[in-house]
Length: 130
Image (cartoon, rainbow, N blue to C red; front, side, top):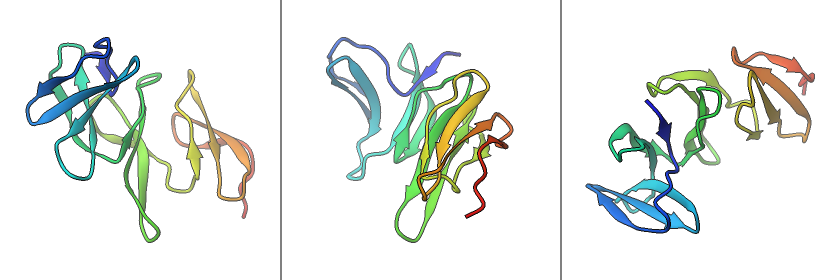
């Protein structure tokens, strides 16, 4: 199944009840109709595959997508999911997380130090001892 948080509908807007697919330029995303927007994943036919429960949802790259479920001063819950919606890599220790390119992903900690993790979530480049 090809899952995307962003699907191309060429700037159109259509209902996927109770969800709305909105377009900004050539980027389209799925959001819930709730007052606090939440993102999920649909397939290329518009079928809801992973419920709208994330504050942020990135594209799937190399079979994984980075999502943020909760992000506040007291709580942070962010991780990579697979195409079944299962949490596979916890990324709460990182400030910035980019998507995977092949088997590696660039991360940054709160001190501005960069590193690289693998698909097991292991830091393979960098040393975050702070």
